[in-house]
Amino acid sequence: MKQLTIFALGLTLLFSCNNPKTRYNTFNPGKEWKDNNDVHINAHGGGIMFYNQKYYWYGEHKVEGKIGNTAQVGVHVYSSKDLYNWKDEGIALPVDSIDSNSDISKGCILERPKVIYNEKTKKFVMWFHLELKEQGYKAARSGVAVADNPTGPFIFIESVRPNKSSWPINVQEYHKLPVSDTIKGNYCGEKGCLPAHVDSLNILGRDFKNGQMARDMNLFVDDDGKAYHLYSSEENSTLHIAELSDDYLSHSGRYARFYSNRYMEAPTILKTSKGKYYFMASDCTGWSPNTARSASADDIFGPWVEIGNPCIGPDSSTTFNSQSTYILTVQGKKDAFIFMADRWTPENPIDGRYIWLPIHLVNDKIELKWKDKWDLSVFKE
Image 1: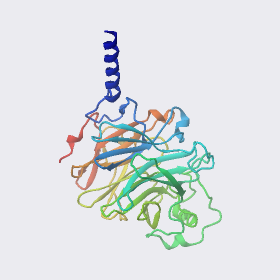
Image 2 (image 1 turned 90 degrees about the vertical axis):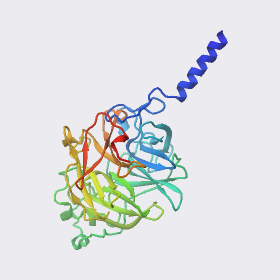
Image 3 (image 1 turned 90 degrees about the horizontal axis):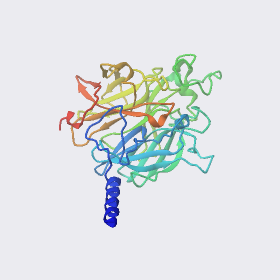
Image 4 (image 1 turned 180 degrees about the horizontal axis):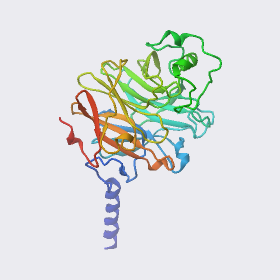
């Protein structure tokens, strides 16, 4: 009898380890979201890649306390077949805890990692916003890493200021004029920090030789396989959309700038089956949530036309107390997109919650409405 009891206990433990207590069949925005180990998913500022019938969610791995606002571990990855339930696949890109001179040494700021698959090279490519350790937000660099498998390990290649010695395709002649020697090399990156309009100061020209600043960012692969890097630039005042090289590991030098002095953070993008592009971003107010912006275009290089706040109803002025991070395309359904956002908790970043909501396309605009609970049946096949 004792042996049978021990055997039964062993089966119970085995069953519980392989069958998590928490299973989901709905999205529950703002609530704790547990993985297969019954641990709150740790993939903040993240993005989703679909590959070989699985979704892969990459995001910042946070730790408890304010130190969690710096990279102490690296980029976490999870996998899912249904988008509701996620398996912990470990750390896809670890920070360097040995070499203090590494660009991604432990304690740097590594934000908004995104991964795309290159059909030509058969490689998985990760880009992220990188700030060097103990330099605050002065570096404004983009990091790139590559892997042979979606779960990694990703190998860090380098960090750069994008588009060094390249003018945007919509450059103005005044940008090419000499820059005043009174212009500082860095400003604080918030609204009100620049003493004049960004074009009057010519921050674009200031950074021409060393490359453009790049902070909040995203990636997008178009129908033709061309990939693009969207990032907040010029002291966060202006959005850049930059084409990547064919292998996705560098910039082609072809890019454009939009919304100068408008301060667009947390850029996200989608493309409909009709070929229309939509863009969503936030204002620039630090950790505090603000009113979302949206825009549309018929070409990724514009012109982009703003179409207002996509959020409707209570808390719409704060994007439902969150900030955009990615727009996910749901596979197998036409024009089905999910808005992904973070509800930041900078005092204890590991406790940050996720806001996922369905995007509705209405009269050539995008709309977001709060839902306490929802599932994929909201989308038509």
